[in-house]
Length: 71
Image 1 (cartoon, one colour):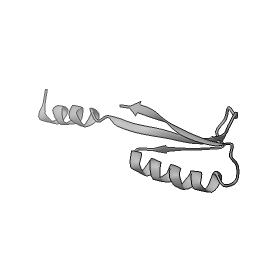
Image 2 (cartoon, helix red, strand yellow):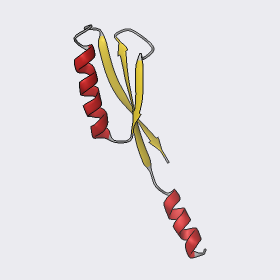
Image 3 (cartoon, one colour):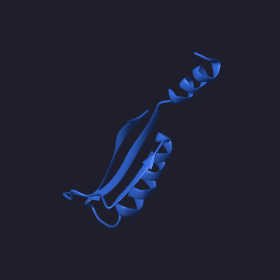
């Protein structure tokens, strides 16, 4: 294996973790807003700001996130 091939293989071995954040109303099967994040802390800050706005409008607000592993 050449040095260039080794370097290319190493670059392709980067694991990406993403989080899919969503917000919906309680009992709803579909989210009314979704976003993808690669930075967990950024997602948590966004979620806090978002819930502060929407929880004042309705007590049926629900948000959450799923971890998505990509390679």
